[in-house]
Amino acid sequence: MKDKKIIAYKNERVKKFAYNLRSLIQEAVMVEWGRLGRNQKNKPALQYIKVENERSDLHRALQASICECPGCRHADRDMVYNAPLKHWFCTQCAQEYRDFYHKKKAIIDQGGFVGDFDEFFHSTFL
Ligand SMILES: [Zn+2]
Image (cartoon, rainbow, N blue to C red):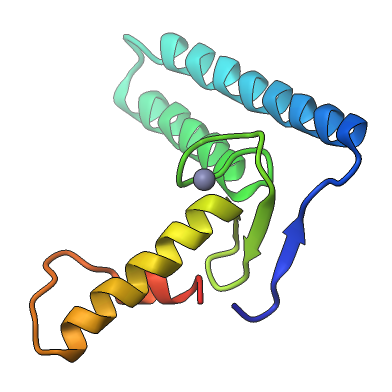
Protein backbone atom coordinates (compact mmCIF):
# COMPACT_ATOMS: atom_id res chain seq x y z
CA MET A 1 0.00 0.00 0.00
CA LYS A 2 1.41 3.37 -1.00
CA ASP A 3 1.27 6.31 1.42
CA LYS A 4 0.97 3.85 4.30
CA LYS A 5 0.28 5.56 7.61
CA ILE A 6 -0.08 3.30 10.61
CA ILE A 7 -1.16 4.37 14.07
CA ALA A 8 0.09 1.81 16.58
CA TYR A 9 0.52 2.93 20.18
CA LYS A 10 3.45 1.41 22.01
CA ASN A 11 2.80 3.01 25.40
CA GLU A 12 -0.01 1.11 27.14
CA ARG A 13 -1.38 4.19 28.93
CA VAL A 14 -1.50 6.21 25.70
CA LYS A 15 -3.08 3.25 23.91
CA LYS A 16 -5.78 2.90 26.57
CA PHE A 17 -6.47 6.64 26.53
CA ALA A 18 -6.69 6.75 22.71
CA TYR A 19 -8.96 3.70 22.52
CA ASN A 20 -11.24 5.09 25.23
CA LEU A 21 -11.42 8.41 23.40
CA ARG A 22 -12.27 6.66 20.14
CA SER A 23 -15.02 4.66 21.87
CA LEU A 24 -16.41 7.79 23.46
CA ILE A 25 -16.56 9.58 20.10
CA GLN A 26 -18.06 6.47 18.47
CA GLU A 27 -20.75 6.27 21.16
CA ALA A 28 -21.52 10.02 20.99
CA VAL A 29 -21.99 9.79 17.22
CA MET A 30 -24.29 6.79 17.54
CA VAL A 31 -26.35 8.47 20.29
CA GLU A 32 -26.84 11.51 18.03
CA TRP A 33 -27.56 9.22 15.05
CA GLY A 34 -30.26 7.48 17.08
CA ARG A 35 -31.70 10.77 18.37
CA LEU A 36 -31.99 12.09 14.82
CA GLY A 37 -33.69 8.84 13.78
CA ARG A 38 -36.28 9.07 16.56
CA ASN A 39 -36.98 12.72 15.68
CA GLN A 40 -37.50 12.05 12.00
CA LYS A 41 -40.53 9.82 12.55
CA ASN A 42 -43.81 11.36 11.30
CA LYS A 43 -42.00 14.23 9.56
CA PRO A 44 -43.04 15.45 6.10
CA ALA A 45 -41.06 13.83 3.27
CA LEU A 46 -38.65 16.73 2.65
CA GLN A 47 -37.75 17.08 6.32
CA TYR A 48 -37.42 13.31 6.61
CA ILE A 49 -34.93 13.25 3.72
CA LYS A 50 -32.98 16.17 5.20
CA VAL A 51 -32.64 14.36 8.54
CA GLU A 52 -31.76 11.10 6.79
CA ASN A 53 -28.98 12.89 4.88
CA GLU A 54 -27.72 14.33 8.16
CA ARG A 55 -27.67 10.84 9.68
CA SER A 56 -25.82 9.47 6.65
CA ASP A 57 -23.23 12.27 6.83
CA LEU A 58 -22.71 11.56 10.51
CA HIS A 59 -22.22 7.84 9.90
CA ARG A 60 -19.90 8.43 6.93
CA ALA A 61 -17.77 10.83 8.99
CA LEU A 62 -17.44 8.23 11.73
CA GLN A 63 -16.45 5.52 9.27
CA ALA A 64 -13.87 7.76 7.59
CA SER A 65 -12.36 8.70 10.94
CA ILE A 66 -9.75 6.79 12.86
CA CYS A 67 -12.30 6.17 15.62
CA GLU A 68 -13.89 3.13 14.00
CA CYS A 69 -12.75 0.52 11.50
CA PRO A 70 -15.38 0.37 8.73
CA GLY A 71 -14.61 -3.34 8.30
CA CYS A 72 -15.22 -4.58 11.84
CA ARG A 73 -16.38 -1.44 13.72
CA HIS A 74 -13.72 -1.96 16.40
CA ALA A 75 -12.28 1.15 18.02
CA ASP A 76 -9.48 -0.56 19.90
CA ARG A 77 -7.01 -1.67 17.27
CA ASP A 78 -3.94 -0.39 15.48
CA MET A 79 -5.11 1.49 12.41
CA VAL A 80 -3.75 1.92 8.90
CA TYR A 81 -4.79 4.68 6.49
CA ASN A 82 -6.07 3.57 3.09
CA ALA A 83 -5.30 6.64 0.93
CA PRO A 84 -7.28 5.59 -2.20
CA LEU A 85 -10.41 4.97 -0.10
CA LYS A 86 -9.67 7.85 2.30
CA HIS A 87 -10.59 5.65 5.26
CA TRP A 88 -8.80 4.20 8.26
CA PHE A 89 -9.00 0.42 8.70
CA CYS A 90 -7.67 -1.70 11.52
CA THR A 91 -4.52 -3.57 10.61
CA GLN A 92 -6.32 -6.92 11.00
CA CYS A 93 -9.04 -6.05 8.48
CA ALA A 94 -6.44 -4.57 6.11
CA GLN A 95 -4.51 -7.86 6.26
CA GLU A 96 -7.69 -9.88 5.65
CA TYR A 97 -8.63 -7.72 2.64
CA ARG A 98 -5.05 -8.09 1.32
CA ASP A 99 -5.13 -11.89 1.77
CA PHE A 100 -8.58 -12.04 0.16
CA TYR A 101 -7.29 -10.09 -2.85
CA HIS A 102 -4.36 -12.50 -3.37
CA LYS A 103 -6.61 -15.54 -2.94
CA LYS A 104 -9.23 -14.31 -5.42
CA LYS A 105 -6.62 -13.00 -7.87
CA ALA A 106 -4.93 -16.42 -7.95
CA ILE A 107 -8.26 -18.05 -8.84
CA ILE A 108 -8.92 -15.44 -11.57
CA ASP A 109 -5.40 -15.85 -12.97
CA GLN A 110 -6.07 -19.60 -13.32
CA GLY A 111 -9.26 -18.84 -15.26
CA GLY A 112 -11.58 -19.49 -12.34
CA PHE A 113 -14.73 -17.66 -11.31
CA VAL A 114 -14.78 -15.80 -8.00
CA GLY A 115 -18.27 -14.34 -7.96
CA ASP A 116 -18.76 -11.02 -6.20
CA PHE A 117 -15.22 -9.66 -5.93
CA ASP A 118 -14.50 -5.93 -5.89
CA GLU A 119 -10.98 -6.00 -7.30
CA PHE A 120 -10.44 -2.23 -6.98
CA PHE A 121 -11.53 -2.16 -3.33
CA HIS A 122 -9.31 -5.06 -2.34
CA SER A 123 -6.35 -3.85 -4.41
CA THR A 124 -6.24 -0.64 -2.36
CA PHE A 125 -4.92 -2.69 0.56
CA LEU A 126 -1.83 -3.93 -1.29
ZN1 LIG B 1 -11.30 -3.87 11.34
